[in-house]
Image (cartoon, protein in one colour):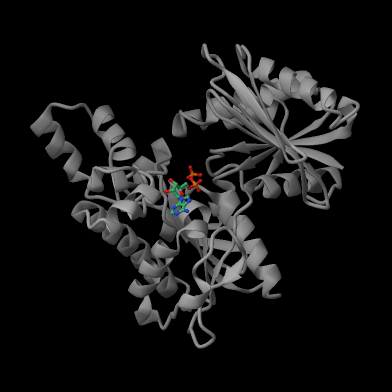
Length: 395
Ligand code: ADP
């Protein structure tokens, strides 16, 4: 069967058409600058890449173009061949604990969480509505970034602030990247043929989060009420002392909104190094001896190491550590730096196995106390699997 995995942003729409259950990518692509003057799209199919500039007034027009291209390129003959569409939805609050079949009523529930993810949820919902309009007879499934984390206990998700903040205003830890962490957990449990693994999953990309998982259930995760919390990231600060906000507001006259924007967009690698948010630029600057780039990399790897050590304690000893996403999959330098900083856990990197990018590999020595793997994440596949399971009535 053919299933579309979709990730709709406010001005973009990413798709992957997959053949399931074979898990083969048939085609993929990106519609960009939707609603803006210079919109365009690219489609990758059979090793070819097609790029077209065209006006895309809204998501509905983008979906129409997508379907027309799939037919024109003979990727599908009729619309019925697309048996399901799976959508990435960022926030499902504490209500959505797993993926769900979408209809108008469910979408209204999802929209309740728009306030908690104002940049993402309304755009995700717009994408779903566009597909519902163009493919009204096709099952649409919502896969939430937050759902995997709903197994956390109060002890982990309640902040030590006035309890009414939680009761009245839903202030709690939600966690994100859940679909990626779930994919990593599923993959490593299958690989090691053990359903009761205690896993520390390190999703380290431009955004980053670390999750402690026991027997398929999240125990704790580093992101929080929003994706700003936890480890340092490309442009986000991660955890900081909340008092800094009031102090800086008094010093600079910036509003809370501006300061929060600084923490989201001008901090992390970019803020500390002054070079870039991209770790490739940071690594190049480190090799040239740039002091602030060296400092940025040092702080970055230390924060990751600290979370791993903390979660090893929380899990009462992890069975496996996995690196994934942009840096986790592609940066031997960062993996080495992090692993040096968790040596006290008895973790040992096999340097001869670390020099590669984007593959599934074990990188620890045989006598490492905790085995360490690199696994390329695949959120699109996880979304397609969930959608397929609804079609096969497995959920
Ligand atoms: P996002 O959070 O946007 O999904 P990704 O997981 O795609 O991000 O990660 C993107 C980041 O991965 C880039 O900003 C870059 O810092 C890092 N990255 C990608 N390739 C490499 C590489 N070869 N070496 C070091 N860092 C890399």
